[in-house]
Image (tube, rainbow, N blue to C red; front, side, top):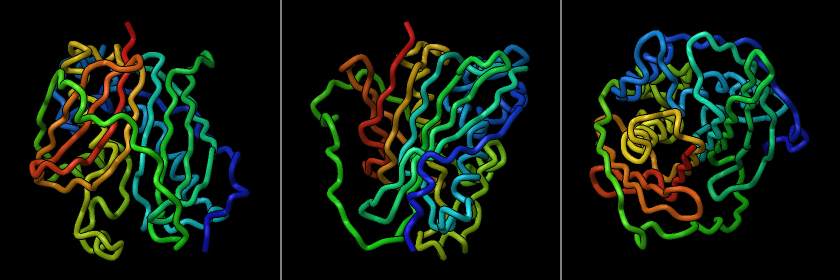
Length: 275
C-alpha cells in the first residue's frame, strides 16, 4: 500500500500551545544542554524547541487514516527550522501544518509537512519542516539526491562532544511528547526491524544545534536563524556524538555529527545566524 498523494496540500491545525519556563527547561535537560539561557523565568527556548509545539500536527498527518502510513515504521529523515525569534515563557502559539509533498525514496516512501507557528498577534514566529520516512512501503527506487559540498574539504572552526545517556530517549520522549515506541520500547524497535531503541532524530538535531549555539553563536540561542539537517544513520543510547562545524559558505555554516566510531549520523547540516 502506497501513501495517498491526494493528501498533498491538506492542513492540520492545533490552536493555543502555551510556552512555559518549565517546558523550556525540561527540553534543555532532555537534550543535555546546560546553557543558562534556557533556565529561569526569563528563559529563551532553544532553536529546536518549536518542534514541541509543531509535533502534534505532524503526528496528526502521520496518523491520518487517509494517508495510509504504518507509523511503527516511521523514522525522521530530515528537519528544517526557520526562526524569526525565540519562543519565550508566556507565548501562546497557534500551529498550522500542511502536507507539502509525498515522495518515493530508496528505503520506502516519505511525506514532508511544514508547521507554521504564529503568536497571539498573528505574527510568524517559527517555521518547522519535517520529512518522515515510512520504511519499506514500496520497492520502487530512485537515485539519491546529490549530497552537496563535501565537508571534508572545509576547515573545522569548532567541535563539541556530547554523551548520549542510557535513559536519553525516555527523557526526550517526556520533554517533547514524541513517544514513538521505537524510541522507548526495545521489543517495538525490533519489530520495526531495528537492532534496538534508537534516539529521536530531533534529540540528535538538538545536540548539534547546542554545539552551534555554544560556539559560533557565542552562547546566544536568539542568534540562530535557521538549522537544517538530514539524518543519515541512527543514534543509540550510550554513544558519544561530536559535532564538527565548518567555515562559512553561502551565508551559513556547515556541520556534520559523527559518533564515537567515526560514523556520520548527520551529514551536510546547515546553520545560519541572525547578525
